[in-house]
Length: 98
Image (cartoon, rainbow, N blue to C red; front, side):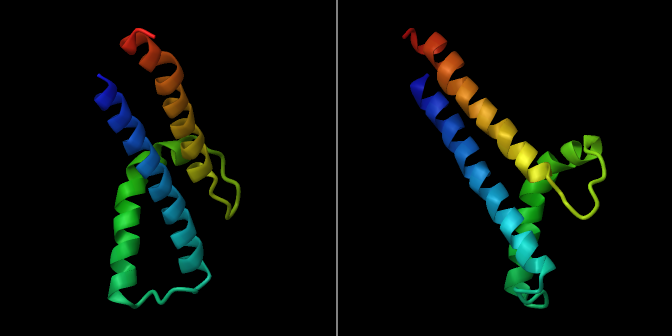
């Protein structure tokens, strides 16, 4: 059971970094720091979009319009942090009998 909990926590941690990479990439893309016509850059952007958009879309539906500011990645990071802490502090002790 410990292996399952550690795997879930690791997956949450990896997804945390994917969200941060996606946010940084979107800033670089928006300010024309990266070449948008480069095929490699486009494939990285497409991959990050496909990995993060299914989780960000429901959050964006409920968020009010803040102009050009998108805080949905921050909300998602907070949710992931809560889930990680909930697993480590509540579920893991119950399952491991500690």
